[in-house]
Length: 204
Image (tube, rainbow, N blue to C red):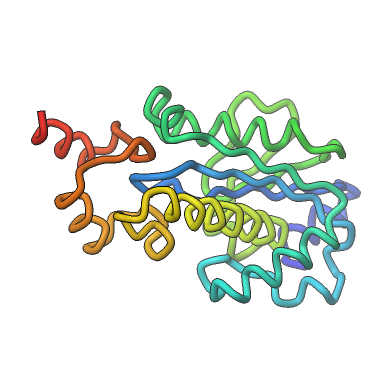
């Protein structure tokens, strides 16, 4: 258990939910937000839980199952590329975090998020700088969100094989940019992102 969560528990504030997202910076595919409440933050089964970016894909898949088994409640919200376009990525993210918390089967007493406070949430919440590195609940949420989104992107790669979504997961890599220049934009690209908008304008 990390210091911030220990302080909350010592003050009698439980249960604690962690919230994080995956795909905010991608120009294709959905934004995925997860909220997680863990049964026991000191459980030895959580020893390997950390920021999802620090783990290999195979390791994340393994720890994903451990988190599900050790959680009292998990909720995942999937925000489509079209909703990101219509609302803007930040507004869609904040609303997705609200929906993720509200959809938990267990009502949290406190919510910890990675980087952004959840405006309009009735439950007390705190945005934690580098939260996925300093709070195990947020780290757990980051893994749930990342693994869920990666699975979606691998399925998307089968449907749209020209873009290599299984590899770069929709982020703006050199390989993705090359594929976009060769094949244009597909329906899963976020048209509100500048690189995608520029390609659409080019092809008009």
